[in-house]
Length: 101
Image (cartoon, rainbow, N blue to C red; front, top):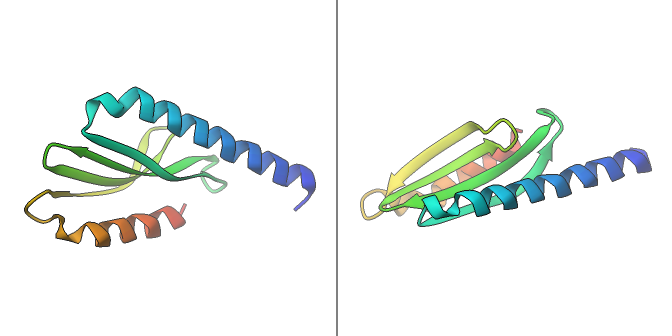
């Protein structure tokens, strides 16, 4: 990888971080909890990808999202107090799904 390639990749990663931060600020009022994490640039998709945790009331959603197209690439959810004892498993699967992109 040439220096210019790594500089371009770094700039894209920074831009993805900025986009995720803007989305989180704009959308956080709609949720009890909203967090974009593991944000990065996907060369496969030529886009920004992030893990998303969004909680509203008892519903807890775990997703992998393309931040530019706003496409949900993977998601699963659980209901707090019912089946969210599998939250650790959902987080693990979310990270595995992120690695695919």
